Length: 226
Image 1 (tube, rainbow, N blue to C red):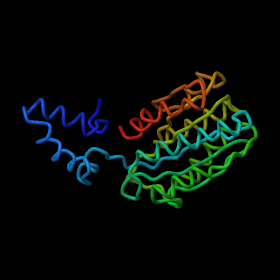
Image 2 (tube, one colour):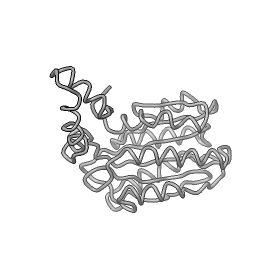
Image 3 (spheres, rainbow, N blue to C red):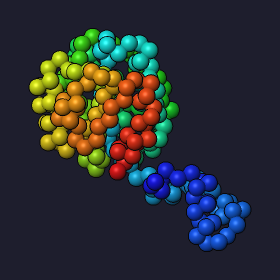
Image 4 (cartoon, rainbow, N blue to C red):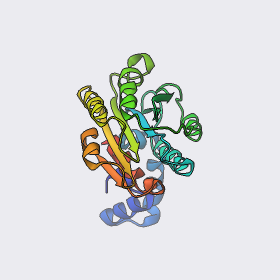
């Protein structure tokens, strides 16, 4: 367990055992520390330009697409949002790819959560290569808010193979060469393990259903901020 994952109660218990103090003595002080901006900045250093790339193809279904929204919102809630912290963009793909919002379109947690709750379900096929191309050539560029001093990370979610796997893998490699990290999440049995391994930079996850995406939120947040 890393320090930023501890609750106040867990931290109090550890300090109490270490210093042989009463819980009441320690609790008041530790609560102030956990709630302070200094503590947040010290242990939540996560200045990232984050792009969610979501599968919007017909195979997902409207109900499962709602779970995608919940997943995005869950990640956003655990991030410090702002120009000195993390910025978030959204790309969705089906027959083609489209930018739902750029990095600087929503600069507060409230605005981002509202945008995430309204991600449209576009339906269609699976043009993964177009999403990677659009991310590299438009989203993660300085004219659309990408920062030189922030790490670029893509969170890619799919429930099946892509229309043109060779092109998708090639576009993913170009993102790798540009220094972009790709976290890949496969849902169900359809995603090809080899394809995901070629697309990811370091981390990948597979879950059985979209409803299970909530179980990997904390792991994705950790991967974003390591």
